[in-house]
Length: 216
Image 1 (cartoon, one colour):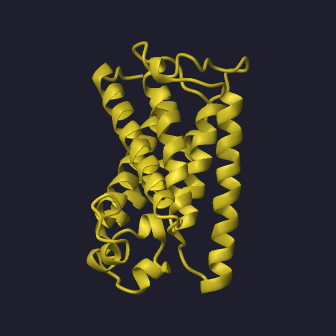
Image 2 (cartoon, rainbow, N blue to C red):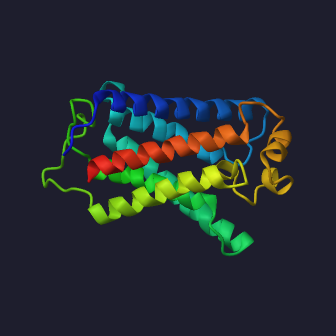
């Protein structure tokens, strides 16, 4: 395996922690406003994913048993899968944004089921390989990496800013399918700016794809 610079692990660890903090900030903002806006479940998932992945990139930042994280991401996988089905039943066949978050939850589970070996003493040292030495199937890993990268590119190119968090059928976007329309409905606050929500999704997709590549 080609050695990866240690600073890169710290960079990704810091970035996913920022995304986690941003998700928590959005949740606090919603609670303060006494209403949960569409996308609150994405904020919850980003908070858990960011904290968990930070511990994978930099072991000193890790905490909690693997079983706890596996339970959390199993619950998120079920939640987003059910939400995907409900969205299709309501709006017809379409590529719902819940689906990519279900894929991301699955990817997180795989990171715990098939942990990579230690790299430069910084990556996943607390999650040793199983006794069988099982590794993630490269084909599945490449499919997940391609899906995550495609989601990042699509998010950046999409005219529906904020759709990665709220979905294209959200009232926030249907009432104005642009960043300004979404921002005006959310009070115009910088914290809930659609481009910032999309940026957090892109960072999470890229970081997760990088981790999956390390697992191959």
